[in-house]
Image (cartoon, rainbow, N blue to C red; front, side):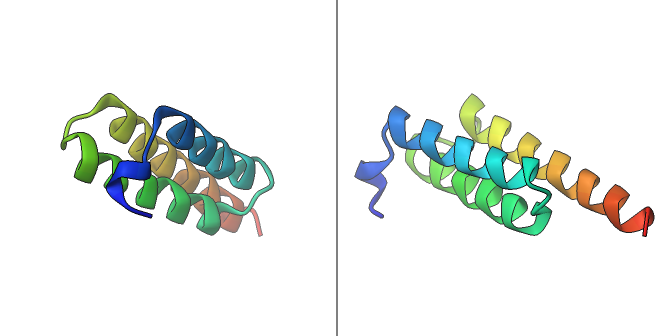
Length: 73
C-alpha cells in the first residue's frame, strides 16, 4: 500500500479490523494491526496525528488484555 492510499475510510476500515481481532481474543493479531496502522498514519500524516495515537492506544490495550488472558491460564 502506498502512502497515498491511506484515506480516512481506509484508516477506519483498518481500525475496525484490529478492533474485531481484539474482540475475538486474537490479541497478537490485533497488536500487529494497530501497530502497523499507527506507523502508516505517522508516515503519511505526522508523528503526532491523533489517529496514530489512537492506534497505539489500541495496541497497548490489546497487549494488556493478552497479558491478562495469559495470567488466567
